[in-house]
Image: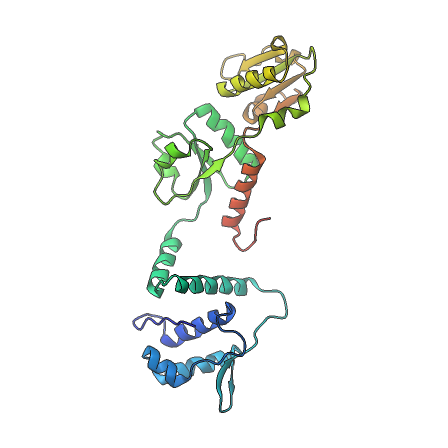
Length: 308
């Protein structure tokens, strides 16, 4: 097992020795029954005072990590827990794995400490930030996201003055296909989550084959939704004369919709329609993308609980 020692650190050399041996045991770098270097050998190799090494070994023995065998030396005890692992022990194992992987990469302890300090100093994410140039589409997507997650969902256009401010503590999100232009507005190391669009044929499957003579309303604040609905419903066999389109940005947009059998709309527009109206909300974001947002949210809010 490789050990690191910072001689000018505020943490005592004894505590550095004890901590690294415990982490070595937890990560199986030091398996049960392995003999530890002698006090003299360890002191000479790392320029430590023999009393420091002895004090560290005695502490480890008191805490039952190691045992002394008369005339033979100091050995790692069998510390496998008989009961379920505790959160603190699980965290210790994660730290042990981090240090073990760092050693494999040839990284110094100072480098690991500096990177950990960098991440600890960062503000943890506390909201999702949807970045979308189209204002109406942005509102619809934000509604869908907020129904799927508990963290606040904020939104911004590419040119919005508040974009830089909103990015602080944010988890940036964008529609698939727009990542390239949006990444140019983000810090170099920022992560960008991608939203996949829901399959239109799958969403329409419950309405096929097209019922003859049924009057359907289609309403949305986003012109793209109306255009997409017109194209897909017509292609699916719906008679264009039975489709009533309404742009929800215009005054009196609900006029004539009460005569329709149902109203196909986005989730934002569905909120504005009367409760007794038969609404058929068509989500734009795929369920897999919404599930990914929920997993990401769970990870940053409760990192010790593995997402399903």
